Length: 222
Image (cartoon, rainbow, N blue to C red; front, side, top):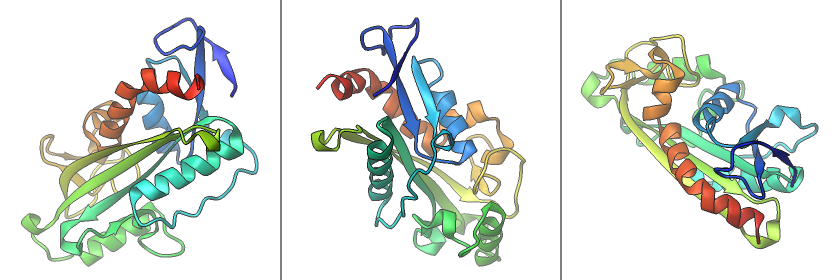
């Protein structure tokens, strides 16, 4: 595993900081993860920096299965300690859909706009009290040494409801539709730092961050 020298010793192993591959090409996710870990001596490596990386099919039956599958495959491919996540939106009126299929909700050519349009169409006419929903995020951290079984998962959830129309220009995915009652705004109406304190991904990352010091030492020192 490659490492770089940094002055901080908070998480350093032998006065070196650990490079962690972020297993996503989604710039919004990368930015949120970088922001959450910015005060730690960790060098974040974006998946876009690697060439010919494998396309991991997310065919698991849970967020945990998908996150672990991606983290394991990319750790083995890259040789980096790897962090990958799977997340989704669960709508009560749709019995938890789109769930793990959130990114592909609108079909083969799905994108954020099409997914949001479909969700609004499916929920058309439902009053606010029946538009309850939650964001779920599971983050997996895996060692590139597949034989040692070193891996951990961290889960975060955030409760809200689906707005009647898109609001805000920030964020990505379903953020313009996810209304968070404690702030009285959608996730697309708040800045990244605020979102990081309350979001599903922010909560999962907070758990990861608290666990990192002993975990990194365990991962790197067999």
